[in-house]
Length: 457
Picture 1 (cartoon, one colour):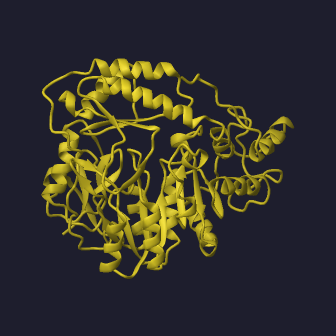
Picture 2 (picture 1 turned 135 degrees about the vertical axis):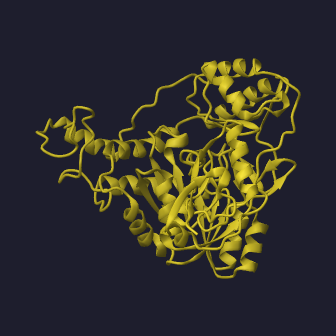
Picture 3 (picture 1 turned 180 degrees about the horizontal axis):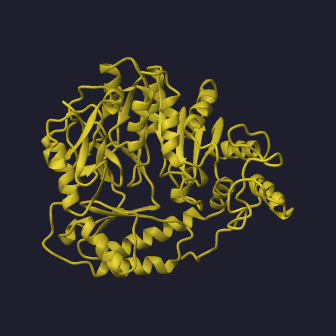
């Protein structure tokens, strides 16, 4: 098994620039207010440093090297997470565009819809044998048939459980219909760095975003935004900096420059082999089923994402999560059926021993039907998201919201997908879905003090 190794900051273009300034021991009469005493690399844009919004030096070099590593024409550092990247991609489109979007999209996609005034064509992931799958190429083709004016298709791949859509087939469909392929690959920043992992969107997507902070050695909020369409490159930069802070953290920029370089040296093949062994140990525990498994619409799975079905123990993922936390084990998320753990080659072996030990002592009851939660239909849309988002609204108790028009998306978090989106009539099935998740231990977004925002009749 692998030994724990420390993460070292690579001597990359950004870190060299910051170290040169810090080592000069300057008198700092500039932002930020801690004057370097919290971190000497935390500075503002100066004549001797670069500017993320108009780069001309170290940041140009760093982003060019990032683009080459990920197979992109353009690469941009983003210090606002993949949320800003998703919004930026959709803001490159002409206002009021028709956009096909998987219903498993992150809530940031809904924000982008009303900011851009776009009309969504929602795509439901495949579902079979109680398992959620991915958006299939057939579903995308059907959307083009029903709505030939679709300007772009946004696919979330991989999803929170590491399931990858068939981007090759979807890309072909998009090109055949003259539409752009946009990919929210927030959970797949590591894919481009090892042949042991699924294919990166690099050769397939026109634009894509990925979160360095999710799977690489980077602090929260660090993301990479990529473009392959030279005609769209300028619009992508303009769109990102429309929503991006003008005071990005240089400490985070240095971490972004270092993260992919560091992770590229990790032995992912050995890590995948380690996880194969871990899965065998978990499979030997009564009532537990670790996967990735084959699901409809899924062409590949991230072997570093450990997903454990606990239904055979007669408990929910939420209950299992509470049990693990009492034993000092914290996973990324839980849902009604599963535990989801984000793993890394630098995880100490002892962590996996602790995980297996805690799983062994999970409560065991009569096995339950192991079906992942799913909304099997979309609420009826009666308004565009933008029109709904900027209408007069009021807060109503969640349980009393049936029949009202949603003004602000809400759903279960994680993964942050909208059960109801702005402009849709909230129905009983939607409410049952989120209320059941909450009663089972799930957290909700878009729900404040038990209330959701709806349009005033």
